[in-house]
Image (cartoon, rainbow, N blue to C red):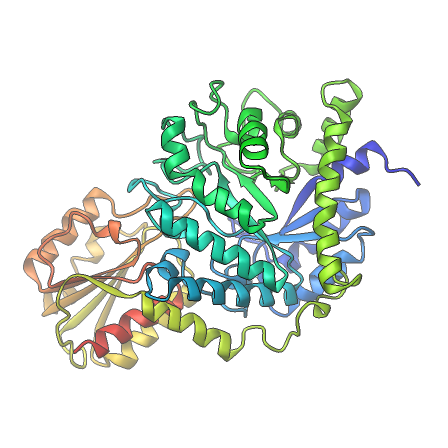
Length: 514
């Protein structure tokens, strides 16, 4: 039976399942709505958010029953599948892995474990590794998500991740092409502009993507970022034929699948174009898969109409469908014809979230902790010590609770104070501050969509006042650049990540350094 035009369009759309945005929805809560969409059109895949083991595995199996061709299930898993599926293993950020003396070995082990857990859950495509070089200290969204600030180490570790994940059977995605590392704005909110010359981009940003292509990466994700040196129109890379075709396909030789970053993001939206019109432009530019649309049904109709009116060549979609089908064939060749309907054909489920995998994550977190300056004092049993936890973006309450539990186990007499992103500084002017003899200030410094990166000027000024008054150990739970401008501390420490394993590693480091 021939495939209709609208069925072809649907095959190039990846639907959202679950959400971490406000209001959050679990994958299970979203399943019925997604099932209704699948009953209308044969969509190509799913992007998974906010799942939980083992329920999400069953949810995905149920949705696969509605797909004759097999849904490609994808997710952001820069920190392993635990980033999106509770009950599985959460690893530190990529930068933390890169900071250890065993960086390449750790990255390969991380990729292998993440692949096994993801495939056992029913996830086939990792939106990882981040191939960006985090070379702008004001970048609010890349930071510790990248392997580093220098091109060569990023290039080496991108290759290591892809090779190890590929060996385990997981499909990988290099992002965000042609490089999001030298922006000072967040593409979730606006369209950043990188004004570098072609020579600068080819020297700093493109080598990790070349390494990814050479290592056999399966997908490349576009950046909703403008590069005037690469495309004089000023449009974002996601809609740029010179960037996606001339640079990525011809110059770098990539013949895999090109996928957009989320089409929910402000960096790709256009007040003068409908979502369907934007989708048509991206397909004409060289995109194969449309990720995370607001209204997928309207886009199916709008793109089909563009083909019928001669504004989009149907052959362009046919070529994309061939490339996407190669991904399914790769999975079936590795794991058998039933890989979509039964994830256990890929990897057994008994190792998911195992103590062994958790211990590996904690080991990697410990190896990343370092002293930036100063010497660690003897904090004893915590008597006279106040731990101040400073958050600049929403933080998982379970992670914070585990952190305080670890603090009190190691320092039973410690006092604690928490400063959230919306709290006033009056909280810091409390009796606890006045009574404290010394401080441990742990600042969460991480990239988060639609949130400020690092400390506000007001908070930085007040923390400096505290440092001037009390002996202070300052810790960055994330990017060390978040501590810049704070002087006079007893010591500065960095974990390069704020996940639970890294928080635990920080407290253990303070305990064992004496």
